[in-house]
Image 1: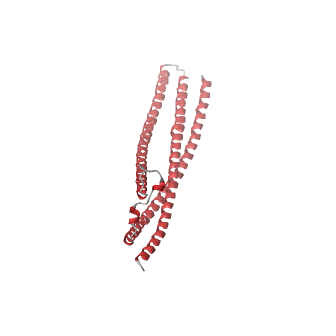
Image 2: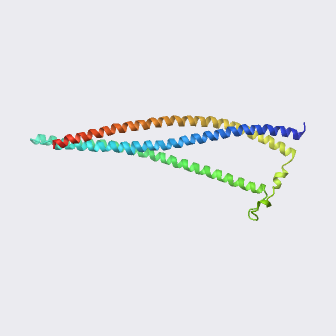
Image 3: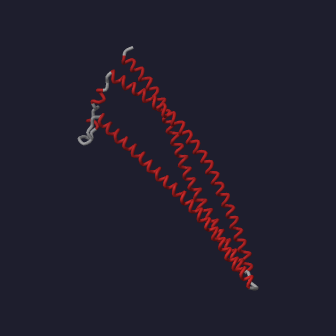
Length: 254
């Protein structure tokens, strides 16, 4: 078998391997896009849960707290002291209620501070992620810029002199590479690069599958959180109805 025939056989083998590797890499690309979409939806759902729990439920619950303590103060204010002992009792109870409220308020403020710090840390992490994506965008842009330049070189074109595609010619670099020895070296190099791509695609496939599984586990957790938030809102609204009912009784006492 002649050297060119051997090269032709190896080229066919590489072509088959290119197809297999391309299929695996494009499958990984599809998995990556799917997982990325799930992660984006997760982010939006988590933010929605945060807003519903922190800006919604917590505000409603805090309003119930305010109204409940107002009701308690109103009840105490409705008492009539018959002597100094009862007067001291009423005043001390009024102070106790205020202290109870302030103690509770400090606890809520502390929790809100912790949540705020956690969200600040998350925002910093998101900024780092954005910067990473921006660097990734720059890498892709720079790669494309270099490849466009290489295409122009291969076409032996000069964008400053002519914009007429009919004047473009293949660069000598392409035709000078057409030797039996150069073909052999290129074929062997292609094979080695394909071997690397096979290994990389297998490793990536395992990682993206694990990431996809983890993302779906979070999806279930976020859904459970959303259900819990909705159920707690019902309970908070039930408390609100109790506060309103208390107000009616207090109003009747005044």
